[in-house]
Length: 339
Image (cartoon, rainbow, N blue to C red):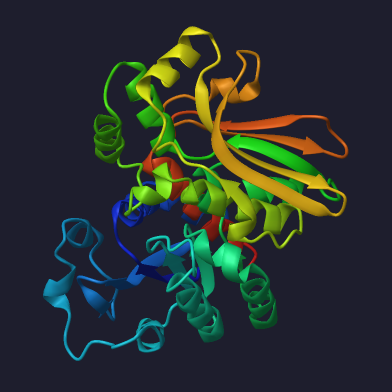
């Protein structure tokens, strides 16, 4: 049974949830897929580039004691770190930069060049370097997987890859951002925008920079990622018509709710005359619209396909464990055929 050397680049809430889930699913992974693992590398801005030759003690790692058994000198960059850890798999969960996709793209490129599979929850590199990184993964005989980037553990990309071969996505409408949904619902209850932001932060669903959520950048990046991968359209971030929720007032929000047509931050992409047009903006949705089902932290995508008029996927009240499962599933699918 091969023991996979895992490296975590970024070790915030999602990374910790993934480690806990790896422990929870360890026996199932071993018995069903012949997969065993150890964590040999952890890197964050605060901790630096940490490597443990024999694998970190998982309990100590989760308790924040990872540094105690590390012997200097430590690696000084991602290339040294991957080599020192003999990385087989990199989990890349650093913060989103919607405008450049960095440094996530460089991290992923380095890991693929090293010969590791890459599993990421960072959507920036998908938008800015999907084709390059996919070709590099193919050349290296490795997998570059990113199911957790758009809707937590919803199998958005693997569904089309595995279950719907040759089906063409003609368009989609979606609620892709939990933070804005929470804020709008708090304002429906009479609370302020600022109180809504604090509530979303308490739930742990915001980006590191909440402005990326409320101004629509997070949703716009997700739209570009889905258009690029599922519609083969090199949609650029600046091509998405974007309006966030910052300027919504409570009166408008409550009036829309009372009329039975609540406001959601709706993400759209539609193929038209050889192009894909896309937008992110607050819209009122009808009670019978599938998007009306998305409340709280729930995420929902309604696809229009050439072989199916409508297909809806929904993650009901996902949490950190849900996001972590998206990463775990990618890990298993990346390595399960290796014998």
